[in-house]
Length: 136
Image (cartoon, rainbow, N blue to C red; front, side, top):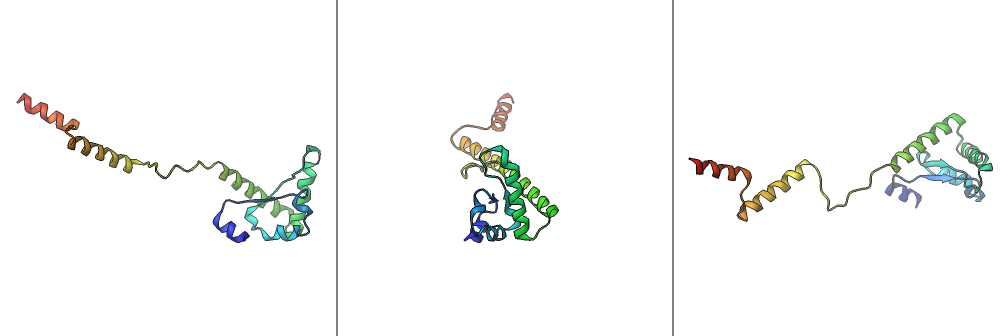
C-alpha cells in the first residue's frame, strides 16, 4: 500500500520522531521501509527544552536502522528538507477552465474579431479602409 501511495503522490514525505512513532515495536522497520528521499525527522515534543534531544534520538535511530553514517544522513535529510520546502512553494494549479498563453490569447482575439464582423461590427482596419474610400 505504501508503494502505491508513493507512486501516486511523488511529493509525500514521512517524518518520524521517537516521541510518537518511536513507541512502535516496528519503528526500525518503518525507518527502513520508506524511500530515503522521502525521509524527514522531527521532535513531536510539546516543549522546546527537549526538542533537540528528541530530534537527535530519531536521527540516531535512523542511522542505526539504515546503517548510514552521520555525514550521509545529515546530507540526505538536508536535501529532503530543501525539496520539501521547495514543493511547499509551488504555485497552486489554475482551474482547468482557465487558459493562458499567447496562442490562446490570439485565438480568442480572432474569435472576437470574426464575431464582431459577422455581427455587423467592423474591425479597425476595415473602418480605416472605409474612411479612405470616402475621401477619394
